[in-house]
Image (cartoon, rainbow, N blue to C red; front, side):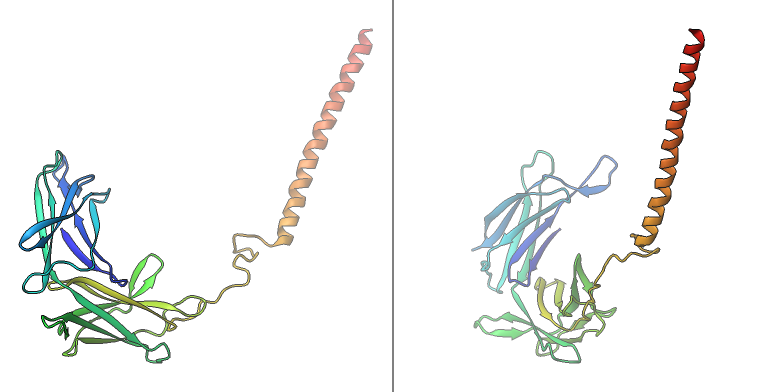
Length: 263
């Protein structure tokens, strides 16, 4: 499949996912497949870049900020596998319009309300509100995006706006700062578009003075217990060494007695 993404930093990427059948007839990621990316310009295909797929079968390219547009103000990206020794020729293309997604919030708002707005550029160069676009709201976590709530999908109204009230118990950093995000996912007209914003709506993370306290139920045992155990094991080893030296002494003295008796 071929997907288009417009990120929060306004960068644009195209991602091709390539799969192929293995010996068992199952589709698996196609590794090291050569994928050529094109953009339609004046009804002709202009090569953007050629990329080899990774171990996951993904081929990713950064797109230029300004793409050639057709009469309907949409752009067309084409991904092709051509003349590859390992894989059959294949082609897929996507047609999308460029959309802008903005976020408006007030860090001091006790209702934690964020308003997202979706617009596109008309033929006259002016912004047009996009109605009925589904937006999903997320919170940035360490390893990815977490839905802000069980029901995190809102559709834009006549003004192109969708408002969402974030929960008040979302853990933040030590200052309570979180990163909120709104996404338009797999939209038929605009593809995948997202935007992010930081705010102090999170619950401040309490930093423990001693993150690894010494206790019986913790990884580190209490210091008195460590000392007692060290004394016990030390006493045991001292006993072993004392017995060992006594046995050597007895053996040595016994050998001397035998030698004297022989003489």
